[in-house]
Length: 386
Image (tube, rainbow, N blue to C red; front, top):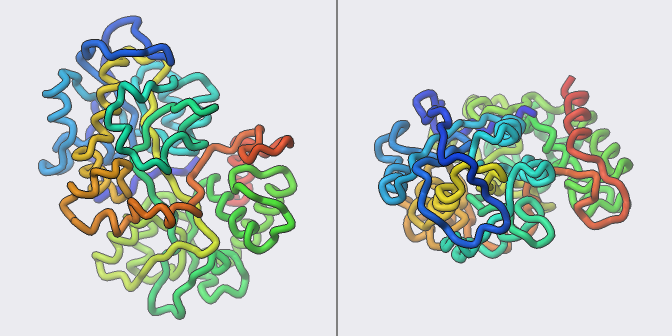
């Protein structure tokens, strides 16, 4: 999978690259954990770049040092560049916790690589927006498997000088789109869900009710849409800087994007704006999860509570470019408009955002039929991109 998510300001060449180191031997975390003990002295994390900052990248950006001083848990982090890489790292059993995206979480749960979390041991969980709790991508059978980190919608970014502002996902897929030939598409198997949303609006007889729950007929129709779309696409991007540069140069005039890319390109003078398609959009909500083999479970629980605390969550949301998960964070961002820019507390805005969720053979929409699992999404996407 090419989902790199390296889209935070500058390249993180100078970011944290500390190798994981050991903690107490033999300790593990499971659903039976009912109280916290003393910290083990370290916590080993797998995270997206920009999620675990200790002042190395920017001296003013640090929500790690205070945690280490308060808890005695030294934070060691391995930057994961793709969801596939994160899954592999967590399967090794060498790491205590991970900031997993929705296209990885169910794989980790199904593989037994992460454990349920006892939210009673995470006091700041109470302040997380309710519409992020116990969702398909972060729970199983009503049991929480982590804490929400933040969220973002995949928006339509468009050149304001290229014509009327688009309001529909149809502009991304239809041959007569006024943006044909200058369209930018996210390069990842999970993008198949965008085609499914298009079909939900244009071919309702297919019966798609969840873009991540596609039976074979629905899946084949989505792939057909993507194959046709290739004729009007000029860019498939996975690295945020690639799309940003194209937007600034005007070589693409419409694309699926993230708000942070829009903000960076706008700051550099790009003549662009962004909107959410009226049919709805895909999006993402990352989840901090604890390894079922964690050697430092107490420090891991402390980290989960810390990273969703009002101050830390405000810091990471603003640095990274996303909506925070903690409702109290909105009062603590340096930019007082941050939460309005990212629609943090606007429940209606998120009501038609389909957060990335790992497709499984068991249909996520509850139908008693077999759906196409994620492995087949990968295979099909590779063929589309060949």
